[in-house]
Image 1 (tube, helix red, strand yellow):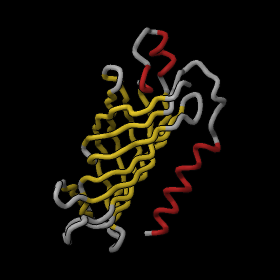
Image 2 (cartoon, one colour):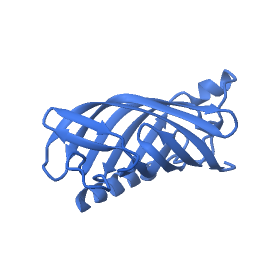
Image 3 (spheres, rainbow, N blue to C red):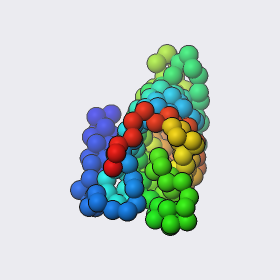
Length: 188
């Protein structure tokens, strides 16, 4: 387990090394958000890394995973949650075009390509089906402002999930939708 957490931390820091000059016209902001969605309830810190990049650093409680050779199952039980930690660098590719077209750009609204690295604990209650899992996926996503304080974030892609204790792994379709309430938005 320690090796997977170390991998998450190292890979999460890599985009910072390549961050661009923060003075730009794309208007990306640093956000702190409370989330609710398919992965559960949590909090996300989304620092701005440059002209076109941010990174979601998320933690929370939600469903757990059962992974076996050739299959994966996600189960939500609010009385027996699993905890998750994820790092998602996001490269926004259309913010300037959106701004020139007069579309809403607050809350880092735009389309992006992302890479999610996620660690999920076993369920807090004894449940042999939900186990310690490491997931990685590459996805296309969109982030949209819903009013002044709310954000919709959705993505679709493909990934690989591994059951850590048994080393079973499988490919899976990566789908996620979450609504976030912006607790903090940086001035720049």
